Image (cartoon, rainbow, N blue to C red; front, top):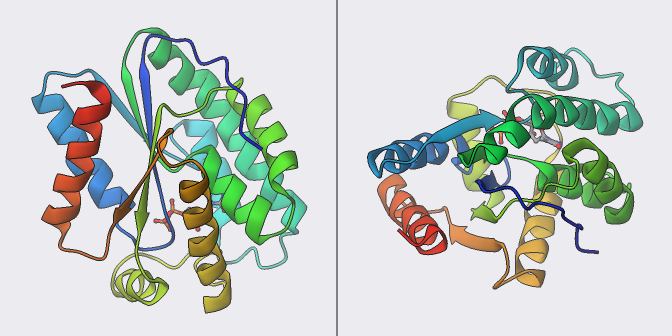
Length: 216
Ligand code: TYD
């Protein structure tokens, strides 16, 4: 099922997606700099998070201490954080004609909760539509890399959160679900980029895609 959209705002929404450790956050920073250098007005945010309230929800949903969290609670907390950031930041910025750059958004829920946790795509898209007021990215960039590569990078750096603690089978399913979505929607808003390459190569591929889509 394709998400429906009433996204008729003048702005442009770009979402970076992918499994753990594929380099979304680094690439989001690099893309932000390039867009600003091109004179664009950009707002960059991450999900879950990006507002005071959403960051508080993030702390709860990702805390490694919350091992007792039920899957349904997880589904609704990601959506609660999303409802807040879309109303507070994303939709107003799009209405002002800005570029909004998101480190994860609605498709993370489709993959992690819908396809991997098993809640189903249809239910998650319905919840996404409520949380986002039917806003869908104009461009979704999937950074794809083998699970081992991502987890190795992750172990070397960031703090381990509750979802990072899932087993390798979970992360493999995440990767496959993302690739499935990108293949189904090829030529539409999804573009898949090989992230198992040096950072500058990935940066170049991301920029080429964005330049093309924005007509820069
Ligand atoms: P984060 O540190 O932001 O991403 P990453 O680990 O890729 O650097 O962690 C966010 C975690 O939350 C990540 O494991 C994916 C998960 N997530 C969902 O399961 N559903 C969602 O809707 C979102 C936004 C994130």
